[in-house]
Length: 234
Image 1 (cartoon, one colour):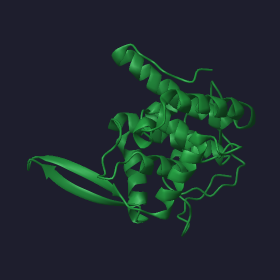
Image 2: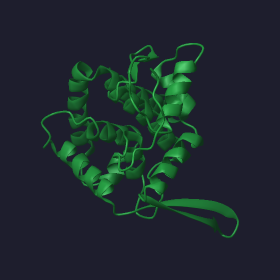
Image 3: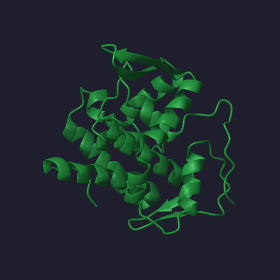
Image 4: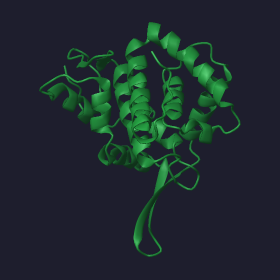
């Protein structure tokens, strides 16, 4: 049974909203290139759908759980319908490349604006070039995710957090994590993420594969443009 899109009053932020909110500095600028963030957003949506039991993700294929009775908000519901209606199956990297477009990120930004998490400021740079800033507000959700992310990085969590760990991994894969937590050493963060990834491959394989697909997409882009790649690996 496919889900019915709805906006539940007072619902918690979903995973892509948490990720996107964390990718903003206090002035409303993205902490990485916009295309890289959009890849992270697309991966976050797939990861959230996997986390909520709407899809299954393997190394080779993304499939929809038709019998799953999950109420999804937009734009997650629209993404699920597109996957379900696809004439041919695709893998996670193909879907990430398809969904890493401005429309998906814009829809999530509108959600954050409507919920009062960001204020949208539109100006023209030098009076000519349009510039949009999404200024984050000091909300409970933003403070809560920072606390949970730091706890995950510092090793205070003893179990996989189905929100914090994926957000940390997405931030790392899209070159944002060091900007969010500049005091943490890269090798320490990477070791911590490798530990979580190995646990997740056993207990949450669909989530692990969705996050690995983001890592692979970023690595392929780096290889194509600079001949470099970093990643968790298989």
